Each structure stands twice: as structure tokens, then as C-alpha cells.
Image (cartoon, rainbow, N blue to C red; front, side, top):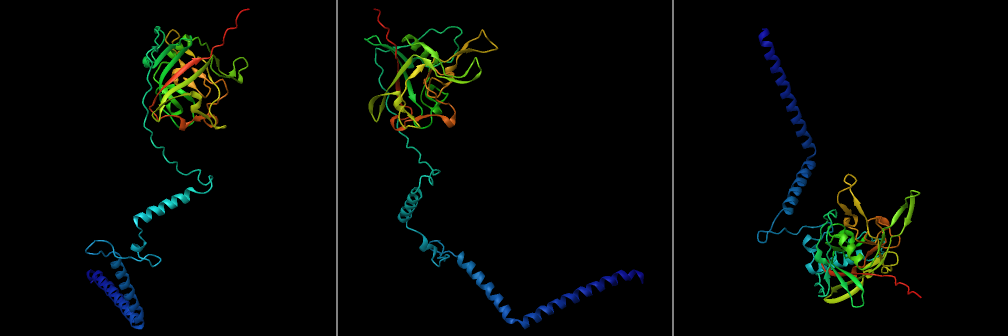
Length: 351
């Protein structure tokens, strides 16, 4: 008898489950009989839902385009589509409306990219100009450069000039340099030239110019902040180049704009002379001419400048004073003859 007790218990449980299911089905049947309208309403809603889905995803057999679907305002999507010409006109008017208004509202608007200007042809080099070359000493270093880019001229009047064949590398932006050494500061210099700075230094010495010293920013005696402007023989810089197919000449200052006054630079550079330094761990080794870091003709004061402005001009980004005079500068890649002429003091005649 004890063997059959578990089987009997299982049969009893199954009977109870079947009884509960039959009771639930009977309750749902009774509720449907009591509320027949609710059942009909549920069926109609389900039917409408399926029909709307079929309409939304139906395609015409001929052109495979969607049928007219109604938007929020009861207008079909096809009616809302605009003509390409109307759409273009509307987009232009919208852009015009966005650009109109106060400058304060548009200060963060996108700047239209500058149209690339084709570079101009190179100016001719006169035959009476002499390529300037010097013998290199053993401890001079090997900064390198193209020696065919610097020429020496002695006029009939006895004036001596130096000519560099430089190239435009920047037309727009804030400046630290007017001319830099190639592959150094092209992002903040209008011109660059592939020359060793010592060659330019030597050529200026040959004209009679005398180097002074770069700008100083502290007093070595007191060790306190104190600005001293760059010194040296003033150097007049002029440019010869092609722009818009015409040969032109200009002062270097005409390519540099003062951000405060919006006028061109008004002072000449001075022959600061940069510095020669030796490695502390190799005092007998080669000397390095520090202007070869890029500071050839500076518009911001640097302690390594070959030529510098004899006025206070910060190199800090937030306080830089000068920018490129874009509309006056020819296309990037244009060759420019940069002429350096020392402004020498005339010796007073003896009585």
C-alpha cells in the first residue's frame, strides 16, 4: 500500500490543476457574454492598426515609390517636397537671414575658406648681382641651406646691398616673424628662406652694418624684470615680386598690419646679430647660431633674433601686436626678392 501512495498524490495534484484551468476559461467566457461590445471594439482597433501599417509600407508596382502619406498637418509628404530650385532659393535665404543681424550673434559663425590663389612667376635676378659665399670654419657647424639664394650688390654710388630669394609661406594670421628659416616657424611668418643665418649675418657685415644685441627682458645685475630694446645698425628692407601678373616693389612694412591701429608697420628693423652658443658639455665643439631656430627677421622680440624691431613687441600669444596684411601679399609659393640695405650714419667732415 505504501508503494502506491506517491502515485496517488501526483494524480490528485493533476486533477486540481485541470479543475483550476476549466474555472478560468469559464470566467472569461462569462465576461465576454456580459460585454460583447468591448470584444467588438478590441477587434476593430486591431484591424485598423494592421491596415495603417499596411498603408504605411505599401509601394506602387510601377515606380516603387511610397504612396501619399499624411503628415501632421494633413498635408501629404509628396506635397511637402519642394522643387530643387525653390529648395536652393530657400536655403540661400535662410543662410542670408542667419548671417544678418548683430556681429555679436555671428562671432562664432563659420568662416568661409579662402579661395586658393595661384602663385605668381618669379622676378628676374640681375646679372651684376654676385652670389655671396664665405669659407666655413671648422667649428662653424652644419646648419646647411641653399647658398644660391643670397646675392651681394655694390651700386655705382658705392651703396652695398644684400638680396635674398625668399618665398611666401603665409598670407593670413598673427605674426612672430616676417622672415624665418625654412621648416621652423612657417605658421607665424610671411616669408621663409632656406639659408644658414650666419651667411646673412656675414653678408650684412660686408655692407658695413654693425651688429648690436637682441632685446633683453631682465637686468643681469639686479636680476629683476627690465626691458631693453634691440640695438644695431638700422636695416631698410624692400621687396620685389609679382602680384596679379605685374612686377611690384614695396617696403616690407607694407605687408605687416598693426592690430591696434590697423595701419602698416612704421619702424625699421635693426641688426641685432643673434647669438653664438656652445654646448655646455662640449665647450670645444661647434658653435650654434641661435637665429637658425627660426628667428631671422622678427616682429616679436626674441633673444635669438638676427634682425629685430627696436620697440617692445610681445611674443606671448595673447599680446602679439602684428598680423599679415593679407590683401597686399601674393599667393603662397610666390618667389620674392628681399633686399637688405643698411642705413649707415654719415661721418661728419673734419673742419
